[in-house]
Image (cartoon, rainbow, N blue to C red):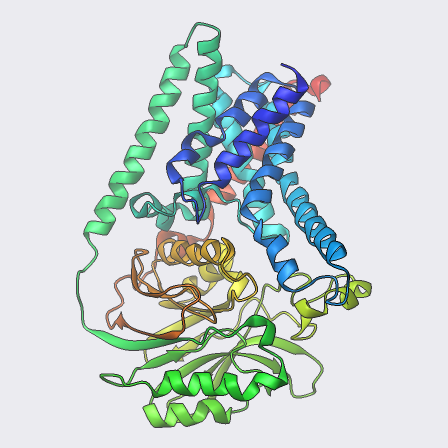
Length: 518
């Protein structure tokens, strides 16, 4: 096969996979999208398979994360005074560099799987490819700072029945099944091209079909047990729709405060038990452990607890945090959560000399990450864990808090950076996965949206769309339907650890059996 054709096939595979995520949402395509890439890995050297994987990953991330370019343009990076052409080149460069960096995972997975498959029985190729692919995803999701947008399970966001298996297998079970299906199709296609389909290939296709059918049946059964109605408590999420690029401009402080006052003053049939404000809701910093007058007045007036996203400082002014404060119904401070997973170049600057070039992205200041284990919030709705914005993309944080007893996860966020691109939709759907994985409810309050209340089955019970302004009035059941949480919440990412161990064992076995081939 000419090298150009190999590159084109690899790029096509990445493009098809990218179209499965929001907003295109061609979710069914995921079951065949990576088959061309898997076929290349089965028929090419590890070196060329790694090249193909890089091309495919670059195409995938380049399309999925096109909004990185838009965000840089909105923020006028590197500087508002820079010529238009310079801003375009810098924005395109950031987009390309990030896409290339994230594509390295795909390159490693493709090269490694090609090497293992070349030294394993042909009947095991689909399973070797799926194991290596998933293992690389597990390793990078745990140990590298990244956007975590390439978990294959995210491609099935439309199909709630399929997603239910995540409560048992966590974030990597469905992805493994999708990878195995693609690889089984690729292996059968290669044999068909050779005018013979073996019994092993037919058995592999049958196996992944039965596994997918079993996942769907299990999911349908789980959803059938979801109660239609139950006694509930009222909750509210505020969506002020403030322009991110005016958010910390002193000129707009009065307008921003008035925005929240109007939302909270709207009539309601009864007072809520909890009100959730979005990330960095108020345009000023506050001291850790202090009451906030603009919030306290509403706690007292409505008799409601409130969780508010704020930029905070410690008592010595040594550290700044992206925080969520819990205030009681009396307006007094009760607890604080500091964001654990900070956004590189957005909330901290890894390379200090670059700070002057991205001032718009670090307008909250250089932030400090919170401790991994922080006290959970005790609210009228029960024990609540908090995540802030980007943290929703990382399964481990919600899993940690659910495993410690949280029945709800509150995600305060601000997707105003990305305006009306695919980014906010991709970010929102991650919260559906976190709810299902852990069997917890999720309350999401976004500055510009999407705000929502999601139940433990991933069903969205209330929602405010992107770019709208309003107060989301919803409810959360009084009864905790999953007091023991999910299997995944209780046992952590057992499946990911199993796959990672299996991959290491498989690679080690191949080394041991054929050391000269290494």
